[in-house]
Each structure stands twice: as structure tokens, then as C-alpha cells.
Image (cartoon, rainbow over all chains, first blue to last red; front, side):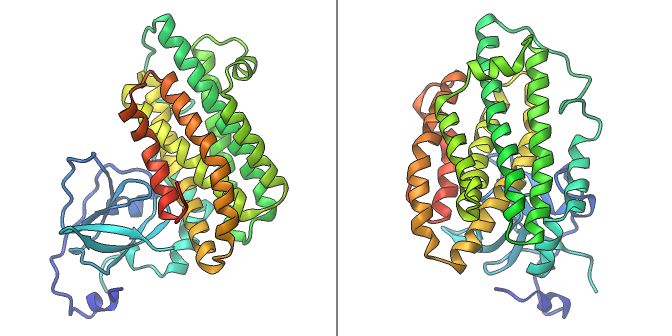
Length: 95
Length: 258
């Protein structure tokens, strides 16, 4: 799993994202910009987004995601790890 | 120090946060504030044909059975929850299930059903009733893993997928009610899958027992899916498969045979 301390120490050269509100309203206000609704199969995910396989909400990060990153899906309380399959980023549940 | 990012929380802090009553309170405020019995009060009812009305009433009657089942089971499970955080989470689920039951009964009354409880009994899906009996048996036995599996994985995944499937074609008021309930179901279903997933990692021997329960309950769940697809008028096979796909994906992620 990738170390979040790398980011704090400034060694992480990934693209950063400024997250804005998405209209997502299923979590407390301070967390809402980290999630958005999924529009189905034609919804193209950005490099800082992965789809939660448990509840089908898009999880957003303030940085570009890479395999091994940990993300949380607060709407369904899942801990996930980002993986690459068939050239696509996806999230896998870690129990 | 950078901006607050929930993905940087420790696992312990994450679980404490999402299982808390405070988290629930601030979450539901986002989508229930300003609603009246689960829908925007500005919405008005459409005109239904007799056939459409009959299907809708049957469907909602069975949603009431599912919600009452979940209300009875989740409240009973608080007594033998393995830790205080799980008990607190279940208390939020009890509130959600009570609300769901109330809004569906209210919807039946809006559709002209004079005695909702008699109508619910008369239109009950037999597979769902068998499932209810079995789930409440597991709760009475205080079998946490089996009860969480039957309720928060099987029943909640079924509700989540059926409600999501009905939403696009439902009338505006029913659609609005279902939209907010699906948001609640995300928490219930996710709690179940993650709690059980952790238990199976810690105690792999429980898998065989749960596999038996899965084999016993899967036919009832799939029969309920089929009958619900029929009630909703979505009879063709592809649609039926799509309804059960999410449920089957959950079972598969946990490593059970489907």
C-alpha cells in the first residue's frame, strides 16, 4: 500500500486536483467533495477517481490515483485499494 | 500540512467515524431535510391505469415486508452486537428501517389503500416470508455472523438492487422515496459486507457454516427477484439478470458460491 507520508513530505510528484462540490449529499458536508454519483457505463472516470464496487459511488482524491493507493468509501463504509486491470484503474475492497 | 483528506484517516479512525450516530445524523440531513414522508412536497401524483396501480401496490406491500423484517432483525441484533460501535451503527439502521416502513405505508395510503396492513398480508410474496422467518430464527439464536450475512448482506443487497432498478421507471413520488432509501441502503449493505468480510478473515472456519446458509437462502432471494421483476413488468431475462447481478457480485466478493 502506498504511503500517504510521501505526499506530506513533498516527494510525491503526482498531479494534484482541487476538488469542488459535486452535488453528492450522502455524507456529512466536510466529506461531500470526495464523492460523486456514478452515471453508469458511459461515465468516464478522471485519473483521481475510482468506482466503489460495493455501492457504485465514484470516490475522488485530491491527487492522481495509482495502484496500491488506499481510499475510503464513506457512503458504504468500505476500505479499498486501487488496482490496475486491463489498463484501467479500479478499486478492490479490503476487509 | 495539507488540506484535510478522509483517505488519509487511519483505519481505526475511519471506522469510528462512519459507524457513529453523528456521521449518520449529518449524512441523512443532506438528503432528507425538507422532505415529507420521504419525497419533495412539491411533487404531485400521476394518473395510473388500474393495472399499473395494482402492480405498484403489490410491489410496495412487499417492500413493507422487507423493511419490517429488517426493522425487527436489526433491533434484535443490537443486544448481541460484538462491539459498541456495531451496536451504535445498528441503532442508526433501526431508525432508517422504521422510516422506510413508515414512508412505504404512507405511500400505500396515498395510492388509495384503506387498510395497508391487511393489504400487505394479502399480497405477500411467499419466498420473502420464508426468508423473513429464517432471518428472525438466526437473530433469536444470537448468531451474529449468520444474522449479519442474512440481513445486511443478502436482504440489504436485494433491496438496494431492486429499489435502484425500479427508480428509473417509477412515478415521480415513488422515485423520490426510493432515491433516499437507496442512500440509506448503501450504509446497511456496506456495513454488512465489510463486517462479515473482516470476520471471515479472522475466523475462516465460519465460512463453511455461512456457505450452507447462503445455499439455503439464495433460492429464496432469487425467487423474490424473479417475482419482483414480474410485478414491476420487467419480465425479459436480461433485465431480470441485471437486477440480481449486484447481489450476486456481493456474494462473490465475499467468496461464496453463487
